[in-house]
Length: 203
Image (tube, rainbow, N blue to C red; front, side, top):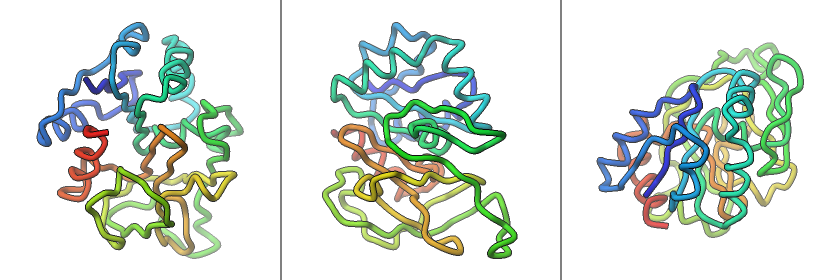
């Protein structure tokens, strides 16, 4: 069973419906004590980092998430769920994250490159090398859907799974051991995203 964590800031039904489309058994988790029974876990997220980490703390999810990751079972963070996995975020001040992947989350600089922020819409992925089962069956250059103003900067380049060019390369997907994460939305990325979710379900 794949658990989708409900902490008040995720597009839960979209993720659940996408998993169901690829034949995966996905259940929305509304209590921390339900996490231990999951074979795999997804942490989605839409909104601000400060509010999200506060919700996770207030609803007593943090210890259960740490315990789950420590077992080695597959874990996937999506969009804000990716950002929460890092040590800190600079959104609305500096705030501590879950620390599953060393590094920080910073904002795109719109004045430096005349960027539109948030980065919204379709963009392509480039592989950084290494074996990543989440990407199995996909080719570099695959297009996925983004909506974000902040992005992660892993402390160890080996944790970067894919990069995307938005006036410079940024980490668009990460992996550290059993922890996978995408800055983009697989559930909104049509056949490419569905393939990734199918790959995750098959781990």
